[in-house]
Image (cartoon, rainbow, N blue to C red):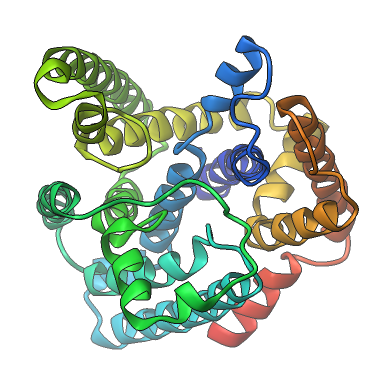
Length: 358
């Protein structure tokens, strides 16, 4: 497997994550998480907290691939140049994130991404062990912070009052530990991605080991989570027990980070296998193109939601209607990707970011 094929596998995974992200964000915004049949509730819950993790881990992989030459040569000029590119992209994402937040999108992840990327720029030439040790340290600190502080409320994601964001203390408290994707511990996903980006995915042994290890770690984390919640609920109460030991995305405790990371790695590796086996299929090609325009579609799905709201489509919605709107947006995105890529190499937002940063 060459580098090109490996990257298309990552793009394919990113495309699937876009669908999961749209479904999760739409159902939370519309308040339809439990307004549907049992199978539908279960099916859509699979994406909760996992789609975003795939995105962040893939971002980390991308940073390692982009900075590979600087890391290997330790050339100071290359390192500085790579850092400047990352900083410019981080600033670009921060501006986009603030814009989305100001128009009412409280669940924005881009301003978090900006800080993840800024932090990652100082890990370009560090050892792989340093990346893993940093993950462990940050995860430990995060668990302590989660015990001390309150956490995010998963409601009202689309809010027309930006004043909370503009308040200095609220901005940094959300950014650091109790927002939707706080640095503590979400930066761990990016650092893990950087570690993964240094592996040789062309080796069958590497992929098989990643699949096996991720499957085992997912099973162990889910099992221990279930057991600890059962044991501690009579002592701590169900709310505290879930907060400390569940694998739900809020709050993002140790069990969630391990479980969601494992799931993300499994998805990414399987996507690489899929793109190898079905590289010639039109659906594979279109999904790869869609994944390459993920930033454009992240912003697009927010504006689509605003349009749906303006048209009255989200009023009294249920989970089925949420899925219909989500799939409508996604299918439209796939079609747009196909025709856009006939004329341009990157998506519109991606083109602007590259022109600004490179």
